[in-house]
Image: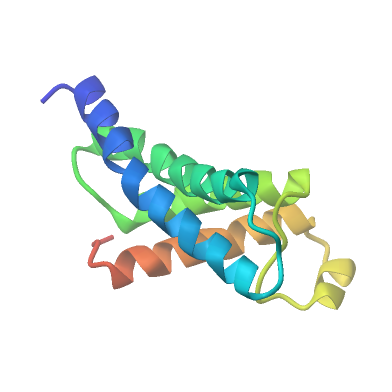
Length: 127
């Protein structure tokens, strides 16, 4: 299979799970009192699909799946999301962010990268 065919297959293959998990995350929001909107569901689904779409070219280039691809994808996604104000930095005390010498976007990239790597390893991917 050519690398471009793999990337196309990889991205299309992740659309249904992205839509389902986006709906689950939005459902959790609705249970907590948020209004149901297709826009929010689309943002969740699009974010998950963008995360997977960053992984596909790395897998095609290396010819195998690796948890490091998930770490890199999570770090890039977290850095951009935090620097643009779309995402917060989970698991980190906000007062630590104020006193840190590192920008919040760098810390967010590290946290989201670690989360991506941990979920990949729980899913059975090797380093």
